[in-house]
Image 1: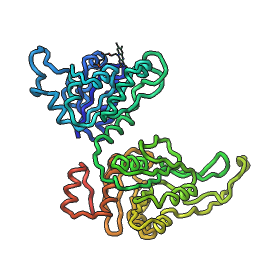
Image 2: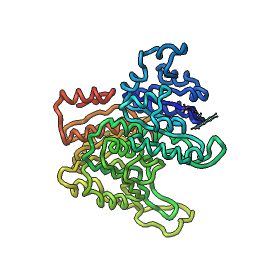
Image 3: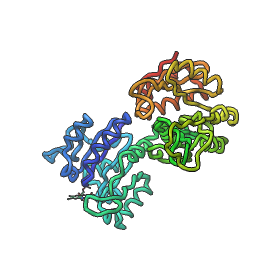
Image 4: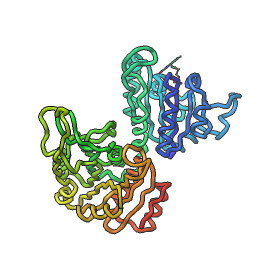
Length: 419
Ligand SMILES: Cc1cc2nc3c(=O)[nH]c(=O)nc-3n(C[C@H](O)[C@H](O)[C@H](O)COP(=O)(O)O)c2cc1C
C-alpha cells in the first residue's frame, strides 16, 4: 500500500525521516512531498535516499512554465494513487490552508484532490498550537474526517514547555494503519488477549517471573484492533505502551490473570492466551522481606491451569488459542498440550532458537491444530500477529485450498508451509 508523507516547514521536519522508516517497516510504500519551507529544514535528498523515490518539491518545474516532470498533472496522479496522505509535521500554516481550501502548493492541492484518508500530526510552538485560530482549524479538519495525531507535551525547540511537540512515530504509524483499514475482517469479534509474564511474590520485594516481554501479545492485540475487533488486553507487567484502542486490564499474578480471564470470558468470541503464566508459585509468601541467612528453600505449588478452564467454560463458538513455549521436542510437546487442553489451536514457540522469541521483535512459530501444523516463518511479531489471526479465522471459516493460496499471495510475502 502506498502512503504519501507530506512534510511541512517546522523544526520537527527532521523527525519525518524516522517516521518514513517506521512506515516502511510496516511494509508500506512511502513517497514524500515537501513544502518549500520544509526544504529549508531538511534536504529532499534525505527522503529520496530513504524511500528510493523522487521527492516531490513543488507544483511546477524549476522553469516555472511547465507542470512537474514526472506526470503532466502530478498532484492529481499522486492524490489518486496514494492509499493514505499523512502530513507530519503539520505546521500551523498548512493546517490553516487545509481548513480553508487554499491550494497554493503541491501538498495543499493534493489534499483537496485526494479521496484517501488524511492524517495530520501537528508540531509547533505551544502558543501557536493553543491559538484559537489553530484550534478552530483543527476542529474544522476533524469534522471533515481528517484524523489527528495530537502533539505531545514537553520541552519544545522554541525553549518553551507545553503541548506542541510532534507525536512519537508509534502513534502516528498506528493512526496510518488504522486509516488504511488494511483489513476489517474482525469487526464482529471481541478478542480477549493475554500478554506479558506473571509475577509470583516471594516476599514484599521479590517475585518469581519469566522472560516474556509481552511483545507477541501486544502485537496480537494491536493487529486485532486494527482489523476492527473490540480487544480486551489482560496484561501482566511489561515495558510496553498499550496498543491504541484496546481495553487494558492489568494483572500481576497467575491467580489475578485467571480471575480477569474468567470474568471477561463470556464477552469473548476469540481468546488468545499469549501470556507466559507461572506454572508454580511460592506456597507461602513472607509478610516481611526475607533476610539473608544461609540457604533458603522455597516450596512451590502449582498454579491453576487457565487454558484448560477457559476451554471448558467458553461460550459455544468461541475459539480458544493457546501458546506453548518449548525448549525440546517442540512439536511433540505442543501436540501433547493441544490434546490435553482441548484448545482449537496452539501457537508453538521453539524458544531454544537464537535471535527470535522472548525479548526479540521477531519470531517464527508453528500454528498447530488437531489436524495440521502450519509453519509461519521468521518475521516481525506484528506481521506474525496478522498471520496468526488469519489462521484463527480460518478455523471458523475454512476456505478451500485455491482461495487460501490467493489470500496468502495477496497478504504476505512469506508463505506458510502446511504439513
Ligand atoms: C526556524 C523556524 C522554525 C519554525 N518552526 C515551526 C514549527 O515548528 N511549526 C510551525 O507551525 N511553524 C514553524 N515555523 C513557521 C513556518 O515555517 C512558516 O509558517 C511557513 O510558512 C510554513 O510553511 P508550510 O506550511 O508551507 O511548510 C518555523 C519557522 C522558522 C523560521
